[in-house]
Length: 252
Image 1 (cartoon, rainbow, N blue to C red):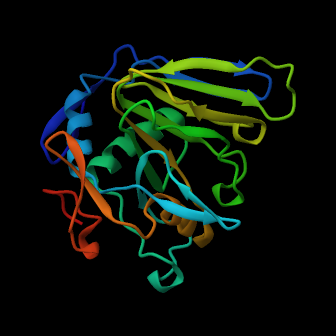
Image 2: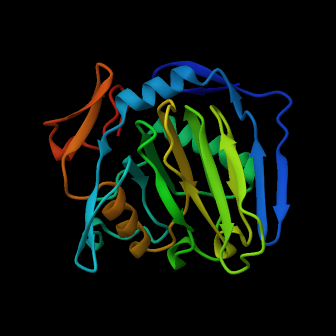
């Protein structure tokens, strides 16, 4: 059992905690199902406490609206001064840091970022992509934790189209660890679906340089408004941007 605070509540790692290895052509993953027990309180707390963003950005002259809510915390390994960054990096809050510590123990990896996604309904999604940017380092480990609703998770090989698409459902309290050559050789997605419950996804990852930090904040905080989940819906907030990193009840 480990404690995440505040609020002072305990999460119990599932016993026995045994990961299922998923190994195929260039695919190297471990699935813990579930990773911990009784996660509902954690889901509600994060949903209502985190600052969320619906980021809009431009690529090659085309305006893109991110089809989910996002937020991110962390800083790269360089420990550069804040003036090196396009946005001031935000420290990982104690609650997310406690979760990160437990994920590091089972994965054997170290992380300095927590990227959070909220899929409000089945229209929210993420298209096929791989986390293979150079700022992640060679053969990066990405750990993905699901809280709340179940969503389909698809993976396809980048070059060998004869390899079948890997399909699974990621459920409440699942932890999927992707490592080795997975990002170099496979893409993954969360497709649109109807009649699905809201889902939070926490991904634990690394950035080894300033470029990585700037990338995470550009695409997961952006320059638009902040949203808070209040009374069962997302509402635009008038929070002072200087306090966007604050989770109520937690110290900076």
